[in-house]
Length: 366
Ligand SMILES: Nc1nc2c(c(=O)[nH]1)N[C@H]1C(S)=C(S)[C@@H](COP(=O)(O)O)O[C@H]1N2
Ligand SMILES: [Mo]
Image (cartoon, rainbow, N blue to C red; front, side):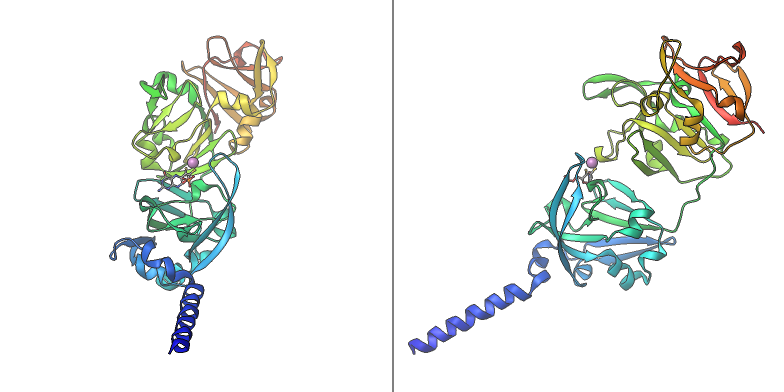
């Protein structure tokens, strides 16, 4: 009898160990799952598909150690358990990763970010329900999008919606507008930025939509450190552009998660226009001295803004003054900010008419 009991206990131990060992992904499924009816929405070609979170969790699971780049730009290692987005798309939408261009993840807390095409094509995208051996925190459930070797700003918690984007029409830039000059004539308001009272404009006031040939539903923001981000046009228009003080120009909105704010903006692209910061240009490009100030070559700004080469350009000042300059002459043009904070041009050996104060735009001269 005693021996039988012992055998039974041993058998039980073996069975329990086996369950623990081989159940793999399902062990944490119950804990990971939120409410049973919770759904994830996928948008593709205008159609919405709602998929039960519990069904997604029944797909093949994967568990692996991965590295990431955190918000301080440091490498870190995490273990994740979840399902591949690719499997979800295969099973429920009938498409593969190569059928899509980019992806916009939206969270239940309002955080949203577009994953650029280079990342979508190159990386695995995991819908994780467990990290570092623990189910996600309540506020991150049901899934956190995880993209190995990329910044954690792409790792969207509390995932609610996945919009699959087929492509973006990127317009040719035919003109640049200087943010610091344009915003001088726009109505500003006080903006409390971590205790400093700075000036901001409603971001919607920046976009000169009349200049555009086509409507576009997104804008592209490039920071001076090279970070490039697409943002939904309506989200952008609902926020503010802080134009002075620390980190300016900066896109902010107290009503959206801070992770969506952007500082040190070099350029905002909308349609055929690039809105450029002269202040950030001077930070970014090699300086050449003008009138005792740090200047930068205008040509370099135009190149970085992706402006086409034209035979002639029209430079305009805030007061309406304008002057035409050839592509060749533009090579000698320098931009700087004078004592009064005005954006000015200087063309060596080209006479007074090329000296512009409060330069606001440079366009192709048709
Ligand atoms: N739902 C949601 N996901 C989010 C954010 C957020 O505000 N909400 N912030 C993002 C940003 S900007 C960063 S840097 C990381 C922070 O991840 P951590 O909390 O694991 O450090 O989460 C990303 N995912
Ligand atoms: Mo972040």
